[in-house]
Length: 184
Image 1 (cartoon, rainbow, N blue to C red):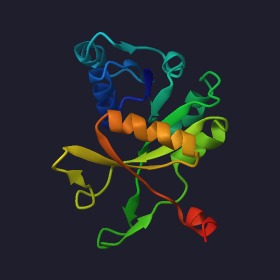
Image 2: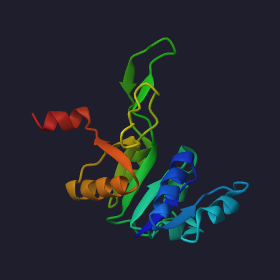
Image 3: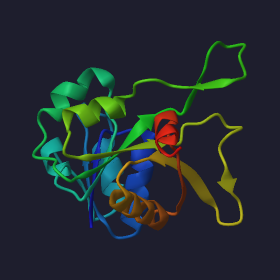
Image 4: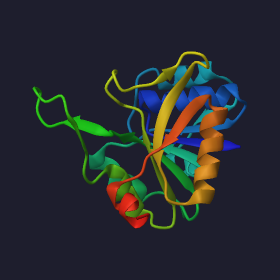
């Protein structure tokens, strides 16, 4: 299987490293020059390539994380993304209202929603793992990091769970308040 990485962030490189260890072909693209990126990719193994964004987007699963400012211009350069699974990784579950507040609140409109509007025929999956250290659940017995996700399509969800499990993540689905209302 091919895994595309669009946007070089720590979390995306973690996905790339894990996928490489499993023998997946990993295609990494970044919009900006990063000192030492070629060397980092070369050290990851033979099945990792630094490519342009268009080539990274041909993969079956795409791990996607770009800055808000470059989102629209970058998405406009992608090929047909119909039915592609896009794991969008720069999402936060909670933010704190003020520095003195200890109660988290759900964040409103996300970059994932923006991507979904720009790529309406793709399956955009919101991936969350940037939680406050208190909230992160590291399963010590299995040494799996817990990843939270949101996806609407059950078939896509099964593929996402399989992929995350193969990468040795423990995955937990989240639902929105609107989805809870639909089930009542």
